[in-house]
Length: 269
Ligand code: MN
Image (cartoon, rainbow, N blue to C red; front, side):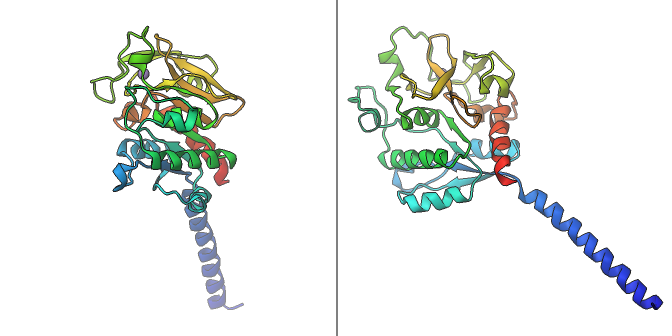
């Protein structure tokens, strides 16, 4: 073999190894779990998500994507093909008559029928595929309702014994009431805490828990603040807004998002 040939072969081997190395590095980056975020209805003219959810997914190591509102279930199925985990976000009241057979009370808030249809289809299809799902506020109530549970339509008028303001005036990164967390629950593992102060922006709450789910946190007035699916590590909801803290650099609840991303990461392997 001539010197020139030997140099050529060495160079080729070098290129082959270095490109393999580059491909594997690229592959690692490509494995970051993709987290779909359910979007708001925006009165029928916009479909968007608050940046706090986006920031929280990024901070926890995931790739956020906005899932635009649609009534096309085949399209929803196609969206679900491309994500590894799902966050159901906060928003309007769920229609009580339509989803849990209760006449609306006077204090019922704004409804968004199109969003209800999208959200219910999205969450049911995601769970039937085995995707990890985190429900926040409306998303947490939605998990309960989608699996046969019911809601208090309005805490102030329906839970007279409550002396807690669940609709705080303080900023989103500030907790205003405490919750007691069930030992050994997902939320306990995610936060490492049994008692913590949370923010509160809701006037509805879980009433009858859906079968197959359990309550994992309550505020001192008994209002349900967290649920999870029994026997699952990847379906859970919180009534408060952890993203309000996480997006503002406060890490108390970052574990709630990291858990979702870890569960989602199993699907990218
Ligand atoms: Mn609350």
